[in-house]
Length: 179
Image (tube, rainbow, N blue to C red; front, side, top):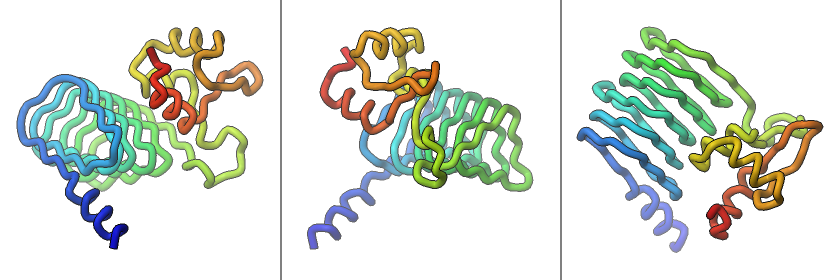
């Protein structure tokens, strides 16, 4: 019974934005977000994100599962999956482990695909680069390198390259150590 209530509570977290907005939207808890209007800034969400057919978005986007039917100008990082459906028009770079581009959709940019953590046995699978962490925390990558070099930020070196575990970064942020 408790599990069922929890599911219903999560299902109720649907935001449908049909207005013009500007700024930075960050969702730490899973949410189903639909943008049908204009948005400009940065967007960082957990859960499902849908950019509607009539939406115009000028933003860098990070999310888990993303479906785009509208116009997006910005870089997109889908942690689980990105679906680009007609009549989408995307200008920007994409990072995602799983990508679908429907006939009639337009994508102008570069794409980098990595499998999700646990899908392969490469030791670096599921890890973040300093640039990934900088974007995730919305700080300069030089700051990330300074923090990790001084021991303030959890990370490790793989050869000459710093690597970060997202779960440890989330714990670090939750502990309030980002200040």
